[in-house]
Image 1 (cartoon, rainbow, N blue to C red):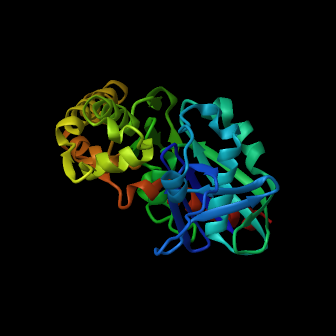
Image 2: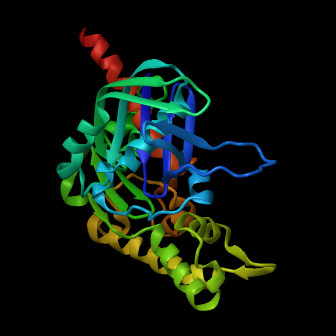
Length: 330
């Protein structure tokens, strides 16, 4: 099996085995509702020391600090998210998996070996209601984030090249996540280090401003988790009891400031109007917030379909391509 997985600070996205998975990047000890009339879609993993909820139910019923530092990849929570993704992709009790994933451009050189060591090998876990699963990851490839967007356009799901022009053209990627914005420059299918950078500004800056607003004006909403505040910011509204709170006056100024910063920073790295780039691919969950702003500044920019999945889809397609390449060598 082949897995493309993008574990972001806000959400995990994964593609593999003809399936997709997307859920908040959060894991806490399991807490059961005393009664629930809704469908139980909780992801609950069982380990020797107890049960843990992962994803949306962990946000709703759990607590715990949101991770936002590079050493997160060494945490137990990170592996739980990985195991939850594996359980979404397959119910097989035993399987072998080839994995492609990514790291922020600024972290690849430092953390690549650490992450590969964590993902390679045997992973044993049990998803509640199923038999124990034993998944052996026998191949791991780690690429800079943003490369997934290029790979999603270069290869199809069968690992075949479908856009040969990408091998000749200069392509830029703006990958806007919760914590980072990746500015990737690719030419001749090689990234250009002098034009590829990562900055620590993204959608979580919006969350911080909204939380400050809640603390000052609506203290009853201050207990909401960062993931819940992010959902409210995207929706543009939230309720304090029965009172609807319009978040546009809070969200729009910070969104405008971040959008201008993204465009200005891209101009610094890539030149005025990014004139040497034939295409600029916009991906990541932040594409929904700033895609139109970027397209006004760069007419050659395209917001990819389902931009939050672009990296995961590209990683998956690349994993298939690498496997086929290895088979041809054999």
